[in-house]
Length: 186
Image (cartoon, rainbow, N blue to C red; front, side, top):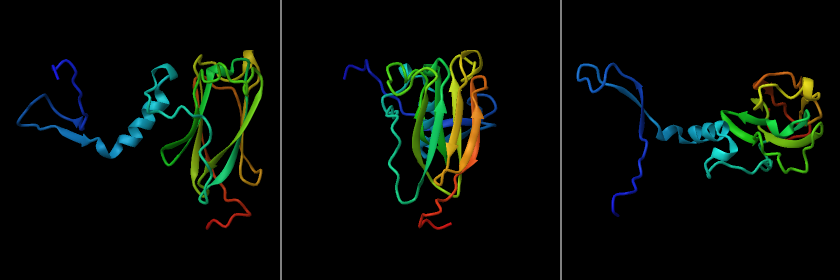
């Protein structure tokens, strides 16, 4: 190694300090190793596709349902510019599924003014959030069509119904119900 390449490892972040290198007032640091997954998820959520690190999950297919989850159905109607709209589900501070802005450029399943549906496995008996974004800060509606978002629970119960009228981001919390036919404990 000629020393021309260096790799650094972040082990802590300054939480609080008074001055710099002050013996009378030592700094308080936070260890980052316990929050690596949370930080990676934040980086992936906030990064545009062209700047997203390779370790971000760019697969927008839903994770598989297991015995501890129920299916929640997203039905989203886009305005005339679906490539400007992104969205994601989170539960327990973890992103369950996301579709980022611009990811629709060549997608045949999303057309201007079209409706897109998919199911997302979520843990019942807990809250989750649905966040919708628009990179042009004009929502998913109005002058460019009438976008809409609806979420349905495992028994076709309407959990959320919202117009596309927002600026750049809207986050809505909702409760994930149990499936009436499920053997999951309530």
